[in-house]
Image (cartoon, rainbow, N blue to C red; front, side, top):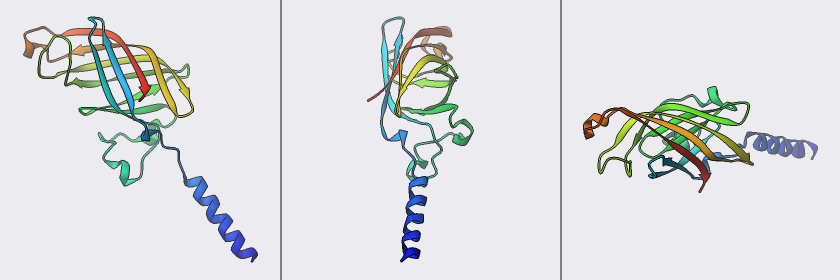
Length: 164
């Protein structure tokens, strides 16, 4: 009897310690507000832990090793292959610098996509597993502006990140 009870308690402990809370279940809205007044909203997911399950294999691409950034950053996975890592500073600021593409509603162009380098910075709050950025700032270094008859330019504005 004691052996059976000990066996079930051991199995229960193993099961409970192997469970991880999943931040990637909830969708987030990443909103860019350009100084010109234009707004772009993207829907996606963020992850803070390594995903070993096949269920998440297609959701995390670009070969980032999540174990390298656990507790130091977040993996942002938004529409049109905009996947990047945002680092969390000790003073609750998210910082991101990566290549980015905007495919719709981009200011200054009617159709096509704009691509370039983006720099994001913003103070975040964390309530439970939910992250929120209210008034972050960004700079988008537009690299393919020549295609649209313009010169390369820097577009600035604010950004927010909220759970959907």
